[in-house]
Amino acid sequence: MLENIGKKLVGNDEERAVSPVIGVILMVAITVILAAVIAAFVLDLGGSVSQEAQAGVNIDINEENGSEEIRVEVTSLGNADHVNIGGDATSLTTFNGSEELEVGDTLTHDGNSGENGTITAIAVIEEDGTETVVASDEYDF
Image (cartoon, rainbow, N blue to C red; front, side, top):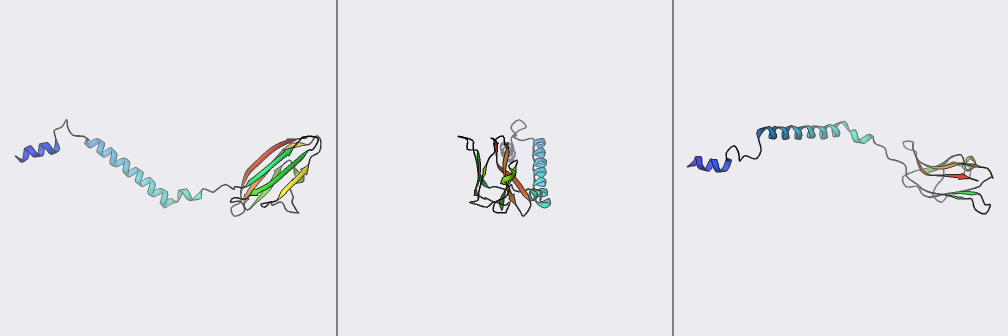
C-alpha cells in the first residue's frame, strides 16, 4: 500500500518535471552569480566611478542688425564648484579678474567683423579635477 502512495507522490520516469542534469546546471549557475556579486563587493569594483560635473549655462550669440555679441550666463552650478570659459573667445576668459564663473555671472563680448570660432563653458569639480563641457556654440561674425 505504501508503494502505491509513493508512486503517486514521485511519479514515474515520464512524469518527473526536472532531470538531475538540469538541477546541477541551475546550482552551478547560482553559485557563479553569487561568487561574482560577492567578489564585486569585496573588491569594491563600483567605487571608482567618478561623477561628471554639472552646471547650467546659457550661451547667446547675436549676429543680427550689425550687432555682433556673445553673452554667457551661469544660471546654476549643480554639483560643480565653478565654470570656466574655453574655446576661441579668448577675450571672454576673465570676469572681474577671475577665470572662475559663479551663479549669476554674465560675460558679454562685442565681436569683431571677420571673427569666428567656438566658445565653450566647462563645469569644474575641484575636489577630483573633473571637467565637463556643459555648453558650446560656434560664432561667425
